[in-house]
Image (cartoon, rainbow, N blue to C red; front, side, top):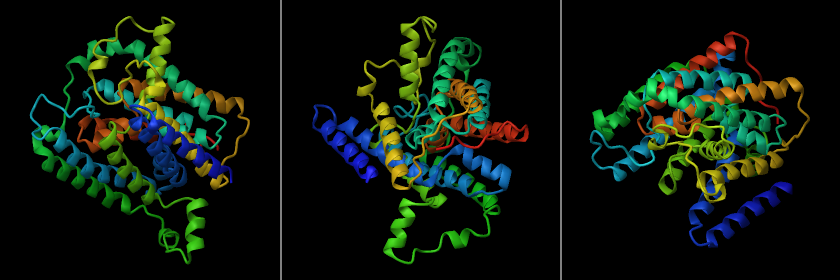
Length: 388
């Protein structure tokens, strides 16, 4: 019953926003964010968790879900971009696409982000949906992430001068066209799938058997965990839907904008951030009001949708965190925030939306953070995900 009231509140808010002048985009952001929050919560879609399952237990289902999301998004994004920019000529990029410069700073950002995930127990998107589950530690991880953004702003000018300003912005359609870029990416994802397929657990067939009745199907939706591939396919489809109505999917812009506004107001940032606002994607530009920002409403929707799903599945379990948990979430969050700001996006904006768009930066960021997760786990820095 509590989940019903949460969904009712989400629906009423979407309706009220849609009735306002210029509010349809905000209403859509809130509504699709709630859908994404449900998907993330029910499928436990978390980049760190999926990578940890593979590196520690040899279970590749989570990584295959990420591959499925990228494959669906690659097809959809390339179709959409061909409408935005019919001829992908050199020097031009699709508007707002998460296509960033490729440099050693990007690798450093990916490594920091990956180690931050290991220490804090989740990526940023998972901290958002676990906040909706009542996680006692997600708020501290997000505070740490904001602190990491502040640090990133203060190291940006040096990194920009040292490498980012002259780094190439590599976009596959510039060299291969849209068809060639999509084929190359799908081929690479196919090879990755073939490699990971060997690590599927033997009980997978039993877990994926068809429900015996409508009641059984409904119970599976509300309780337990959705199949990994469902989550991956749904996230990929949502990413394409979002880009059609808003901007490429990302979950850090609102937090970064709020942090930048706070830093400006309290003289914690350089007077000028060289070249930062010239990049698209998850750029943390100052906005007049976060509540007029589609990304902020998207994040609110994720938290609200995860809350409804957590209540329905009885996974909403607030608790009191330990001092060690708080310290780990804060410390890991700082690394995640610095990496996300320096890399111009997180695992959703940079890795997912970037690779879907054919950005080499997305592939390099993803490879760097996976290497860092592997190394962090080998060094014993890992922690279980933030408890709900």
